[in-house]
Length: 337
View (cartoon, rainbow, N blue to C red):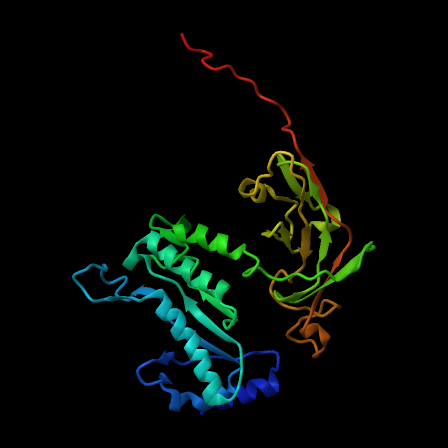
């Protein structure tokens, strides 16, 4: 009852806020959701449905170490978890008579249980099934997590320095999957060309924003690929896409190096590649601000609450050089007796 009441209040007073309910998965034995009768009205009131199921999990961490001799962990068949999550959505539709976005608010395998290599393979299989499934039933999932003191992360925390992470095989696999078109953010061309500056970019959310595209033809793998933000461009807060790779420019940053894209995607001999550069402008502090710069907590309600507008005075300068600044020569065996 309390959850339903909260949903009603949020919908009336903060209509832009979406309420997520994670209240149990489908139970094959009973043919129902966990605690289905208790949470039925809550499912109806929520905006987004959620499930929570790990592919493997060591719940005894950090008190103990997962071994074959204890029972403080679980490991599931990946296909069983996939089908259970899908059945959860189907059951929610059936019992509520509604159709809402369904997400998995936490998903991962635990390297404590399977080791790092199988951990990566388990999540790869789950993501490949999502890509191949024509139903496209899952709206999103949250990878838990980026860095973990145990082995649930894309990185493991360095025990000597918590600000440093040790990359796991899961990270490179996850990066590769996210760069596939299926998992990438869909960007549509607005059809406007020959734009004049200054111009304003709108940011509503990471799934609803306006940007600028610069078409760039690259004739071979460059030695230097850099963007320079000078003068009035330096204070901007920008997200930049280069060939499917994302770069962040914080306020005050003057130069962004794009070479990591080319390190991973070198051009073949004789290849000419079209690499679009796209620029988006989210608010630097994560808050929308009124156009007059007044305090967002004190300003009257208005269109600024839904949208952030940023003025772009000009394009950044692109440095694309195919040769090093200086060639260095050496001879094999030089200096040897």
